[in-house]
Length: 219
Image (cartoon, one colour):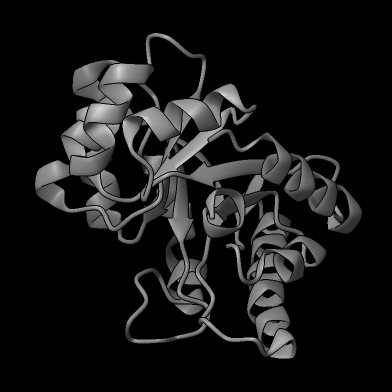
């Protein structure tokens, strides 16, 4: 099964709803086999997202040398897996503490690579969600420049699973407003990674530059 039709439909939706010049579509292939992931790449996806290292690694080992694809890690980072994540992924979305960032930075130096990283912000305050609080980011954001072996490109958040568009809007707008506030204080950013299959249209309207989509592309 190829996914070209779904990808085209989603790209059209992105074009109709985005408020920034460019949006990166990340296909989240965590439920796909290596063969299906290859089909997704052949169908036109250039950015692939995975959230579990043990599932992602064999796919990357099989496909990375055959296709020019950017691999994004979007799951919780465990310290004992940080080195492998740095080794395999170009972009790491889910940096949820300075301690984790220090590990990634050290391994990046050791491996002589420079991955892009995003700081995960828990805008909603849900205990089930990982990430910095908005106030913690405000107080400590300048620390990001202490880590010279990674490339800070912006922020990521996960909204609660809900159909309440007003609430979703408030979550995504808070991240956008926070990023702009910090930009005014001299902390520039390129990307806001926000929006999944159930809420990406709302996220696009609030300034998402990266959306992480699985179900809507592959079901």
